[in-house]
Structures are given as C-alpha cells and as structure tokens.
Image 1 (cartoon, one colour):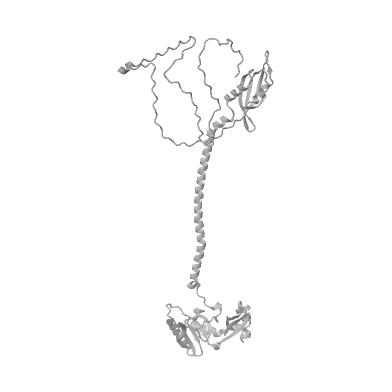
Image 2 (image 1 turned 45 degrees about the vertical axis):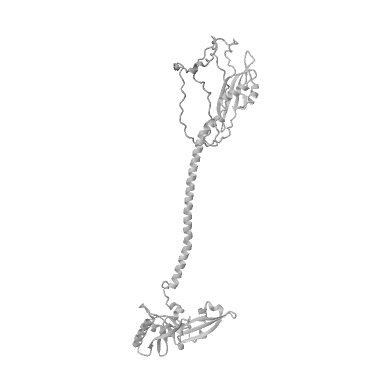
Amino acid sequence: MRRRMTRPVVEFGDAGAIFWRPQVVDTELRLIEVARVALSSDAGEVAATGRAAMNALVTATGSQTAAAPKVVIALPPKQVMRKTLVLPAAVEENLAQALSYDLDRHTPFRPEQLYFDAAVIDRNPAAKTIGVDWVAALKTAVDSARRQVEDWGGIVVAVVPGPVRTRATRLNLIPNEARPHSALWRRWQLWAPAAILAVGVLAVLLVPLLQKREFAIALNKQTESAREQAEASDALRTQLERQQGDYNYALARKYAYPGTIQIIDDITRLLPDDTWITQMEIRSTIRGKDNVRELSLRGESANAGALISTLEDSRLVEQAALQSPTTKLQPGPGEVFVLGSRLRTGTPPDPVPVPVIAAAATPEPVAPPTVPSPEAAPAPVPEAAPAAAHAPAPAPVPAAPAASAATAPVPTSNVPPAAPPTVATPPSAVPGVPAVTTDVPAASPQKPFTPRFGPSPGGAAPPSGRSGRS
C-alpha cells in the first residue's frame, strides 16, 4: 500500500487525464503535475500526446531503465459508487464473498457488470461489528481506463477511486486474477530475510551434525585404540596362560599323586615285621572322566587281613581291600595275599610370590686357587735370618698308629673335602605358580664305610628264595 502511493498516478477527469508524480517536499509527500492529455481530440493525437506524457513521467521520476513505468489509475468520482457499511465481525474472514451476495442491495447493477472492493476501516469489539469502506465501478469504465493507459506505454498496477490523495488506500478495483504480480525473487525485502533465515536454519541443522560427526570420529579412534590394547592384552594373557601351563605341567604331575619313593617309605614304616612284599605295582586307570592311580601289593604275611586297617592309616593310600583270597603257606604260619588300594591325590603347596630383584652388575670371574700336586718337589728354603736361629724348634708330630691288616688304607689328598651338594629350589617364574619343592626327607649323615672281608658277625646268611622287608 505504501509502495502504491509512491508510484505515478494517472487521474481521469471530464476534460482529460492528468499525470502526477509523487515527491517529498519538506518531509511531506506531495503530488506534482507532470503533463495533461486531452481526451476530446483525435484518437491519434490523444495516443501521441499520451506517450509523450508517459515519457515525460519516466524522465521526471528519474528512472534509469527503459521499462514501462508502473502507474496507478484514479477514476473520476462520478464513475465510482462508494459507501461505508457496518457488518457483523464474523464476515471479516470472507468479506468479499459476503459482499458479492448483497450487491443487489447496494447497486442497481448485476454482479457480473461490476468490479468491487472493500477494506475494513473500523472495529467495534463491544458491538462485534466492523466498518467497511466499499467501492464499486462498472467493468466498462475500469477496462476502458486500463486500455488507455496501456496504449500510452504504462503498466496499471491499481485502479482507485478519485480524486487523487496522498493518503494511502487499500482499495483496488482490479480483480485479483488480473493484478500484475512482481517476481518475488526481485524483491530484496523478501528474499534477503528468507536467505538469512535459510542460512540460520542450515546452521542450526548442520552445526550439531558436524559436532556429532567429529565426536563420533574421536570416539571411534578411542574405541579402536582400546580394541588394539585389548587384543594385545588378550594375546599376552594367552601367552602367559600357555607358558604357565607348560611350566606347571611337571609340577602338576608331581603333586597330583605321591612319588614312588614316598610310597615305598610309607609302606615300609606301616607294615609289620612279619610281612614281606614280593611285588609292588602302580598303574593308572580311567574311571568315568577321572584318571586314578592304583597300588597293588603282593607278598606274604602272618595276618593278611590286618593289613587293610594298617594301610587305611596311611596318608598316601585309601580304599584298601584284598583283590583275591589269601593262600596258606605249607609249611609255615604265613599266607600269600594280593592287596589293592587307590593313591590319594596330592595338594599343591601355596603359591609363593617371587620378589623382583634388580639386576646387579656381573662380577668378574675369580680364578680358582692353585692346588699343589703331591708329587711336586718342595721349594728350596732360603737361609734363615740370624734372629731365626734362636727360635725354638717345633714340636715333633706323633706318628700315626699302624693300620690294621684287615682294614684297607684310605688314600689321602691335599684337596679339601667337597661340601655336600645343595639342591637349589628354583623360584616360580610366574606369579601364582607353586614353587618346586620336594617331600623326600633329608638323608642322614652316613658313617664312613669300612670294607670288611669274611663272613658277617652273625655267621648266618639270609634265607634263600625269600626277599627281606622292602
């Protein structure tokens, strides 16, 4: 509406047409007359005068383009019907349709003969009514004025009721379908805010997506790094378990069941003196899913039935029982027996933590002391000093008693006696693995062996065909 008042105006009257140019004078909008065209003269002269007036209007407005100017037509008051109507407020939404039904009440013409328009100029909320400025004109008058201006080279954008005023009006007698619509993309007032809004919407939509994308990429990198570390840890764990299993295999086999020496020692201590073992067998059998080791004893005893309770007292065997009936020996009080039992499973010792010892510097090897040979000649003794001549002589060493003829002489040597061998227990290389230990009792120091010749002091030989207690 404001743009309409700043456009040139062609006002039709009785004498002719007047071309007005809007101009701001002292901060007030005024209409300046540019040219007049008489409509009563010849048609050719009217057309030529109108084009000249239109060119003068373009020149006066200072337009830099050669396009046809957009103008507003003002009809004379005698060709326009105008009144103010009071209508219910409910018809405001469909005002044009409501007025088209009541045209016969306001004009003597049929609706198809008129162009009309209306605008709300007042509202009364208390009475729920609106004031409407209604205007109508014959289609012949409106179309004739539009054709005349278009022949002069102008573009009609609105037809308003006269006389011309600087006050804005929202009335337009041109139908909506016939009004020229400017391209929206040429109006920067429309597309500039739309472009800014579109950029803002894109920023609101894309910025979070970009941020989430960067976050997802960083998270994927962390996940990949964690996965690689987990795979490395899993590989190390697998290698450790494999090495631990390889290292503990011998220990597990050792501690699963008691050793043969322990079994022999335990049975020797438990069996009475009237019992001889002629055969001992240790074998592994599979019962269900378990692998068990069984002990079978064959021998002679004065009371074979009492051996079952004797073996039950052992901490190495269990479930002792006779595997076959006993057989009496003739002559003699003994009987032959076959006794079977199952070895108890051992319990591994508690794990011993291995302290981490810093690697010390490798010491330099020390040369072993030189041992003089017994056959080596003694070194010459230098002459004694004068003071040494007065020293007392060393006491003579008493001679050793002669060796007995029945005892073999033991050769002597200058080499010092060797220390008893020490068995070092290797520490567990893997934490949580039991250290390698042995349950064999320490051997008592042996007495020096003296070989003897001839029969034993008792003079009795061991019985033939029967082994002693083992």
